[in-house]
Amino acid sequence: MTQDLSRLGAWADLPFFTRDWPGMETALAAETRPIFPPDHLRFAALEHTQPDAVKVVILGQDPYPTRGHANGLAFSVTPGTPLPRSLKNIYRELQDDTGNAPETGDLSPWADQGVLLLNTSLSVPEGEANAHAKLGWSTLTTQVLARLDDAPRAFLLWGNHARKLGASLSDHHLKLESAHPSPLSASRGFFGSRPFSRVNVWLTARGETPIRWA
Image 1 (cartoon, helix red, strand yellow):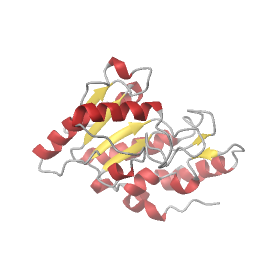
Image 2 (tube, rainbow, N blue to C red; image 1 turned 120 degrees about the vertical axis):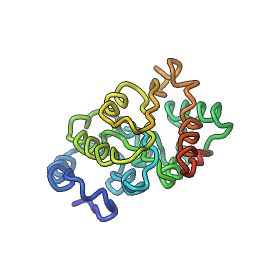
Image 3 (tube, rainbow, N blue to C red; image 1 turned 60 degrees about the vertical axis):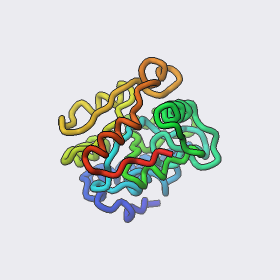
């Protein structure tokens, strides 16, 4: 079944969707394993947050490979899902940083305020993290970041993967780099990095509305 791209808005102009996506969609259709998130949520991050609305970018790697968890937004899960370990650590830092954290793991309220929650792979087969990392999604990530390089934005670059992607961005952005919030690395520089309050200080200084993180 051909994916409905009508909700992409201005993102539909990226060359990826005419040059690369048709072949990738064919490859995904031939996959025999369940793929997450469901088709209708695959481009949820772009649909929620249009280019000119993006104030903050948080880069993840790939969707959760567990049935019912991924909802198309990086680090986010469907309402009612127990918090994955990385998201628990994000909320722990948010609580320490601002005194509050969301009640569920659904981060769509962040996306609706201009936080682009972009995974660098937008699909994963059940139970096999990073299995689609070389499918071709990197082309979309590169084009999205290039599109967002035009005006100052805040980038939260957690872990080596995100830092490498952010290296080519212009100096007019706020780039906050730290360890990844996963249990393997959070204690090596993610905890105590206070990214959420630092983003809001920067936005406020620019005359922009701060993000309501909780």
